[in-house]
Image 1: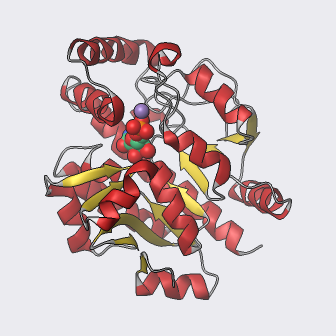
Image 2: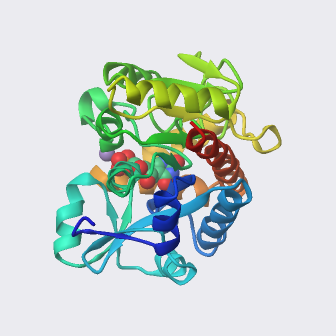
Amino acid sequence: MHPYLDIHPEVQQALVAGQPVVALESTIISHGMPYPKNVETALAVEAAVRDTGAIPATIAIFNGKCYAGLTEEQIRYFGQAENVWKVSLRDMPYVLSKKLYGATTVAATMRIASLAGIRVFVTGGIGGVHRDAANSMDISADLTEMGQTSVAVVSAGVKSILDIGLTLEYLETKGIPVVTYGQDEFPSFYSQKSGFTSPLRLDTPEEIAALLDTKWKMGLEGTVLIANPVPADREIVSDEMEIHIQIALSAAKERKITGKEVTPFLLKYIADHTKGECLEANIALIKHNAKVGAAIAVAYSKL
Ligand code: PSU
Ligand code: MN
């Protein structure tokens, strides 16, 4: 076992037996959603993974170790504690060596999932190329990590707080296949539409599992981004979202928010100013992603 890794016994057992396991991130719990909805959602997402026949492994850092698989009590802690770091790759050595509490982003969760031998990871939204990145150079470490670590990422597409077009260009540069599940258009998190055609489309978990298997057997390291559109009855149309996003972006600029604070600030600002419908969409889409991701993990485990 890796000296900085602690795998939950149930997860370890599943991995040894070749059973499907789905990794889940913790930044969404500690920094992406308000309490108590964050804890309810994290537990519901784990349940959705189980219902679909896979074992969930929520990933976080504490006690100087990376944990793959948390207890309910630990998830509750991460949902309420004030002292939890948002940990991307850059923060990992500091938070580990100082034995602090760290909630892992997409990038850090992928790296830990990979160390543990987990091949499928489910989240809500990934980080990407920010609007105005030409000036701010704000490009999430999620994208560079996705170029090198071989863990599939299931998300609801790319949130339009980011520049979706530039994010798709960056994914292409990194050699990352982008597959939309069941439709031609790439989704934009709250909305099924984004105005961009998805580079690829597949309609079944089995076809996606075959793509993963082929990619990795070819020695093509890195992720496949699987974009799963938000359920139709929870969708918020892009024009309506754009108004909220513009206001949130101006607020961030006015308050001189920079670096790792940008994404959590925008997410919280939008959630606080939209009377809960964005939060409800967020919860619905991540549960939906959990089901699709678990079905992909099940199909992949049979290959
Ligand atoms: N987008 C969301 N919800 C989230 C995040 C992004 O819709 O919770 C979180 C994820 O953990 C993602 C991180 O990995 O924000 C990206 O942060 P940054 O942009 O600082 O790399
Ligand atoms: Mn950033």
